[in-house]
Image (cartoon, rainbow, N blue to C red; front, side, top):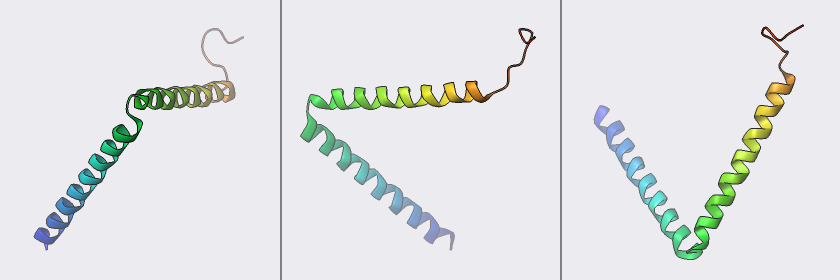
Length: 69
């Protein structure tokens, strides 16, 4: 029973690796030098969204600490 689970896990891991490698190849093959622009744009949007989320958390959080009056 353990062997079957181990074989299944290894097979799925290998398949996942092949899919990831294929996706990476296709990304760079079809985007070429523009791939860096796409990655930079994704990073900028992700940082902007995270910043928005954190600002909302701070706005909704009640003030605390020594500066509270």
